[in-house]
Length: 258
Ligand code: 6PG
Image (cartoon, rainbow, N blue to C red):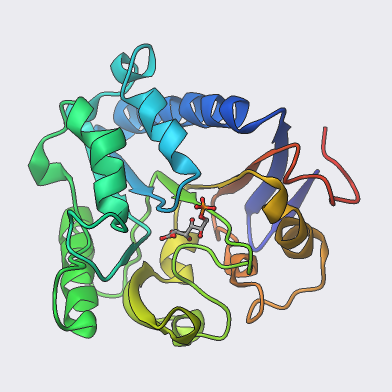
């Protein structure tokens, strides 16, 4: 299933037998994106997703053959979102990626841009992270970062990153990073905004499991209602949108791709 999105963007949905096959396809895609970015620009800028789905992908990247297919010395790692917890907290997206991937690859620590979830003031934490992203990309005022790859997940409620339904972050158009109060979780998160994600070259959703079948069908085939289904906000302006999903998550798609 493909179709033009936004102005110049493209979208495709690829279905894999199970979560393992999905993770392997994602690892191939990650390695290719890294190779192309380093070859063309000398650096690879990637924003990692949190949650549990990407863990298998990160573990694949941490070991041969993928470990040696990525030039980690030229890779710059960011996050799409983070919980407001210290970096060694079990809920930390950074901790999950550190244990599954970053501990196992020779990436310079100066090229790992952790969201400061340990800070007391969420707004200050978001502003600090925005500054570090701007500095890393050497952005001029008003410019948007063009990540070579942004990895995202899909929550059962249609959220992605920490863009949750009916939260203030959904309407932000002038910042890269915001603190987002999520009342239903009783917590605040740090998240990239939709325009920051949509300025990327390639955005890839990794969606696995039967519990994602309903939200996936609603996001991909239902009417546009991004306040209820924030993943519908993701439409790269001049980039590619890929949905890598497993068969269980694709079960309710009317027009199964491929
Ligand atoms: C987070 C993620 C979040 C996640 C989805 C899917 O911080 O939890 O950024 O957006 O990607 O909730 O999570 P699973 O992959 O665990 O289903």
